[in-house]
Image 1 (cartoon, rainbow over the protein chains, first blue to last red):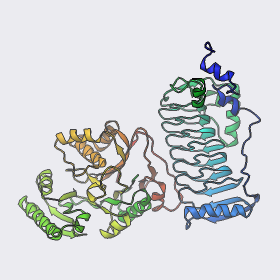
Image 2 (image 1 turned 60 degrees about the vertical axis):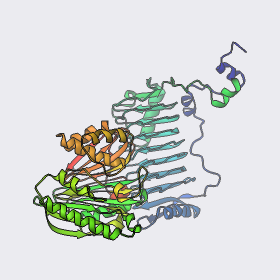
Image 3 (image 1 turned 180 degrees about the vertical axis):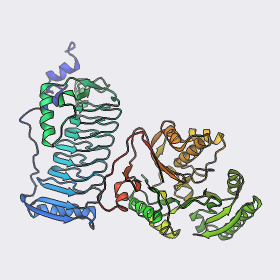
Image 4 (image 1 turned 45 degrees about the vertical axis):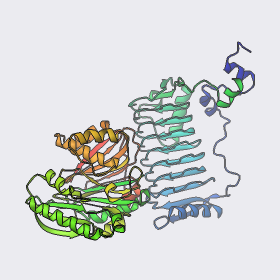
Length: 281
Length: 311
């Protein structure tokens, strides 16, 4: 026992079923990975059943309840017109649904969703799709800061520019930015992939644990422990395929994008989770 | 949290009082403690407009002699203005404690302010040829109604709705702050400055005065200090990005300009709408939508960004 390292010992005890370093790549490129699963309590909706309503005179709570009411009636395609940048619209939807916002959303739009496909013709404010679990959210114009904070799955796409701290604390899924992103994007990122076709601000990927960031434009500066990685053929194929889904294209080609990963040199990187440490110490 | 907003018409005047009231009222949820406006009308180079108060709103609820004290303080203001050679041509009184004077004066403005603020409880909210600075407790709708701002015509304005975090809920700590002693310069701020006390002491040693313990006042004094040293507004604001520490987004207005600055981490929000006719900025887009209900393109300025627009 004495000659074993802590990592070796934790492996011998059967505590690891996967290699801890680089697990993002292994998991997210696995073809059998389940995506877009629905809640067991989800409403049975028909995408061919469509309803439209105007948000102008409604409160945010009334809008969200209206969406829920329509889903309970089987509507699978819902169009909300004139959202007027109101906050917290389209949140907490745990259902397959085609949801269209004709206009712009305020803060916290589409947060905590699991399953819907959302399209927003305007702009979104801060913290769009925070904690999103699955589904897609596509924004035609710009987005504010903390775009896709802590998302765990699904595709979050902004075709314009986004603010600072994009994908902060993200734990999975894919964020695509058609334009520029601000400072501290990918801050403390843990898993998932971020694709920025334009320029990235300072401190990109600061303190990222894992995951991958692809940048098509200039990078103002890397954050602590963020390093440049080598682009693989598999990644180029994935980028081209994924961007094509949303009608986007890397300005200089996917192969010429810069790949940023964690250098894994920070003090917290010893390959052992806290509970594991207690056992082997 | 606080909310800030600004709006400037390009090359013309507009309903700036109504527009700023609507924008700030839409931000009420960001801070209901107080609201303030710095509105810019047509400049009158021959006269100064002075807004001042002779008590805090809360003072009215205590003391047997407060009403007489306020009258006495106003009388002392009148006497000292006359002593300094200022000729008051018009007076308004929106509340028992808040006054608006229009007067002619070509002497040392700093000395005038210092001499008036030497009177107990008197605070000069603003002096300028175009600036009208109004702030009080309550939301923007209440303050606008109380001071009759709804019909104000002008070229531009900035405003603030406050959630008190660093200092008291009183008019003294409400925004905007006038950049004493410079005509027509006002500041609103959303954020926290972490080098407030050190920077304040440095500015006090240079002879600047502070009327509150609110960190936002530091920005107004800092900008005034840089202008005094010869900086243009934009240069002063760019310098502030590196010399003020903390998280902040702030707006500055002068007689013909509106500027915005955002800290290097872009930690505080700002949404910007820019067209050939008008520039509108606010902590949230919903405020801009209160003036432009139709679909518009907006965006967030980036970290460390400074922008200045002219009327």
